[in-house]
Image (tube, rainbow, N blue to C red; front, side, top):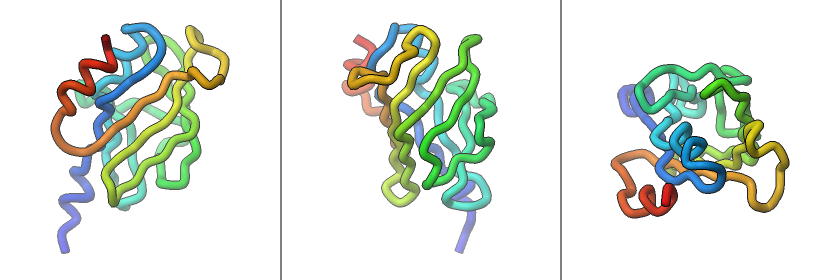
Length: 124
């Protein structure tokens, strides 16, 4: 039994929908990294910098969280993260996209390499 796969597990955002290309760029390739417990994650920017969130640790039962990025408060709702399937998803909003509605921004994340065409399509 090794803790290494859990401690090193990264679930990376590869698909971002909605908002401006700047909004999409602020989320693309950010990732959730498993901590000491397999159902406890922290959020990191695409350069590996820790992004402080409220709550600080994100668990499989965390319905949403908030963080500051690019000088704006981002709110993530309908957050789901699954260590077994190594996937995460949620809806996002920020001051440029303040109202929660059916066309909210969305993201999808998974462990492993890039999704290639899907990631490109999301930013087109």
